[in-house]
Structures are given as structure tokens and as C-alpha cells.
Amino acid sequence: MFTDCPSCFRDAPAYGWPFYMARKVMRGVGRSLLRRADALSLREKYTFASNFRPLLPDNESLRNRHHGQQCFILGTGPSLAKQDIAPLAGELTLAMNGFLRHPLMAQVAPTYYLFADNCYFDGSEPSGQFLAEAREKIVTSRIIAPYSAAHFIAANRLLDVSRMNFVAYAGILRSANVCTLDFTRPVPQVMNCAQLAIMLAMYMGCSKIYLVGLDHDWLAHRQHEGHFYQGKTIEGHAVAHGDKWKYSYLDQMQQSVEVWNGYYTLYDYAQRNSIEIINCTAGGFLDVFPRANYEEVVGLAKAGNAPTAMAA
Image 1 (cartoon, helix red, strand yellow):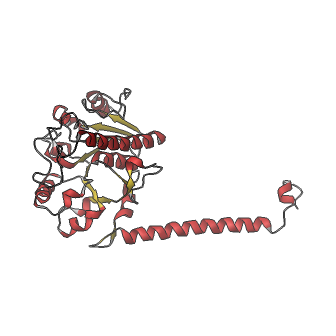
Image 2 (cartoon, helix red, strand yellow):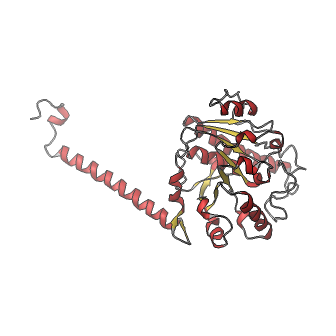
């Protein structure tokens, strides 16, 4: 019965092929069971203490939610004061930190609002005052916050947890070789909230990611806070903003290199996955990504098209 088979099968023992297939099936079943056990472990580890909601597995609902769409990531750099963001109302937008101070916050109504740092949820009086402002102004956005603050947020009713997703960290983005982005598991630790926003946008399937208000010019203007608004994001907080004069210029340059390396890691991931990240900030120092003119982008975005990015 082996006359029409290759010689390797014709000369093999009759029991070899069935045993090979059985072993293959058993290995596949074993891998599936391990994945399921791992998922159960995550559900147990990353639950919501108030109702045992599985926080990280909940992020599966965000995976490819905006597949093929474009989005705008809104920073808080000084350039945002001179760029008209009114046309972004109705667009898919991700805002962060102190963006709620923008006079067009209610009009733009960011789709997502992100906090990457635990300093917003440390129980201090300054952070409490900031969150009171956040509750008043972030009324429709889905909020992303650190998993480590989830219980504190829920127990103190700081924000509307029904509109929240949480992110956990493992490893460091600047030194990571990111093969996949999976928010149902811990993701690499970011150096700032903009990096978290880029990761989230890619996880949600966005194919074009436009950056606005990411000046990253703090080394050139150490005497300023570096926002489109006056003062600090969390006024009076002991550690949220640090002290620029406490560290040498060399130390701050080295920290900037780490920030840049994190961006390069994200850009590499984007290129490998055919995702465009385009910097539309007016000026600034972030030269990792190719640039495009913001006014042209928003004008053509409304027409369902987009201009070609210029070289970085």
C-alpha cells in the first residue's frame, strides 16, 4: 500500500506515521492548555478588587478596535497654543496629562485620555485637586491609567471606572525588542505618556498616527515648564515635576537619550507592521519620525485623504 508514497514513508515502520500525528496533536493540545492556564493566571492576578473584574484581559476589547483608522495624539507642548485643534473635533484622538487645560478640551472631546504616571493617584492633596478637575472636564473619554492605581481609584471614586482601562508594565521600552504589543499583558515601561499613547494606538489597529504638541524642547528651555498652559500640571506636588536645576545638564541629556531610544523602539515596531507615525508638531526637537504640515493633514483628513510625510 506504500507503492505510491515517497521512499521515506514506504520504508518507515507502519506505526510511525500514526504516532507522529498523535504526538503532534497532543503537543498542540498541551500548548492550548498552557495558554488557557496562563490566561486564568492573568485573570486572577489582574482583577479589580471591588468586583473581581479581570482588568488586563478586559483590554482585549481594545485590540484592533480602530483597525485601519487614523488618529491624532495630542501632547501638551507650547506649540499647541499656536495650532488650531478645532478641526480635530470628531476625529479619533488620544490626549494626556494636562491637556484638559486646553480651552478647546470640551469641543475636541478626546476619544481616549491617558495617564502613565502614578503621581496622579498617590493620594496627595495636589493630585486630589488635579483629579477633581479631571472629573469635571473628562466627561466622555475612555481613560487609561496604571494598573497599580486601580484599587485606589475605585476605592476613592476618583474617576468613573466604568470608562477606564488599566495598563501594567514589565521591562523597559528603551531597551526592549518589541515583537508584539498586547495590552492584555504587561507592556514595556514607557518614559512618558506620549509613548504609551503611541503603543495604545498601534494596539488598537490605527494605521496612521499623527503627533501634535510633542515639542520635547525641555533641554533648550530649562527655565520653562514646557506646556501650552502656564504653571505646573499638578501644582504643589512634591515629586511630579522634579527640579530641573537639581540635575546636571549631562544627566538630563542622558535621560533624553533614553526617551529617544524608546521612540526609536516604537518606530521600528511601526515600520515592521506597516504603521505610519507622522510628527505634525509645529517645530520642536522630536526628529525620530517623519514630519508633515499639520494644517495640510487636518484639511485633507476631513476630505478622507492625507498628505505624504516629509523625511525626518
